[in-house]
Length: 217
Image (cartoon, rainbow, N blue to C red; front, top):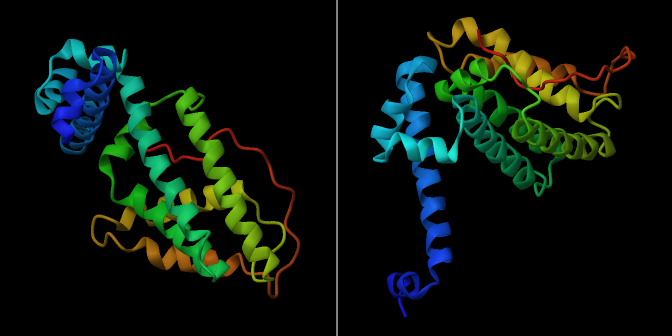
């Protein structure tokens, strides 16, 4: 039995779930494209038209525009967590951490839809975003611990530090990105070298921060 036959033979509830998953995926793709083109002022009507669905369908999936922004952010976070997990399989712990940080800065620097979503989500305690941030911390923490066990990363660096430094590199390079989208690589290298264990003094105590994502204004 082929895929189409299986879908036709599936119970109605199962078919509806599959349809909902496809609709949500198409909706998020359309929303990301529209936000990237028109910024945060893009309307739900524009997004619905791009996705080929009605406005009511958009609101059934995402009751508010903020929920839609949060879903875009969460999808990007999931992608970055997946990068970190793949990098954890690398033999070179330093290279794994650097590649994870590179992916994070590149995500912010080259994704206008994500930047717009970050700008519009005023409450970083949105449950989806909060859960994603916790996953990012855990992923970054794991990569940092590997590098520390190898003796290459200073012992005080934790997962929160890694995520905030990713944001810091993005902010530092932001004024240059229009002229050179890869300008952040210079500042990431400077930052990463400063994280090395050799020739360093003690750091002040770490503080807990409520958001590990840049807020674009």
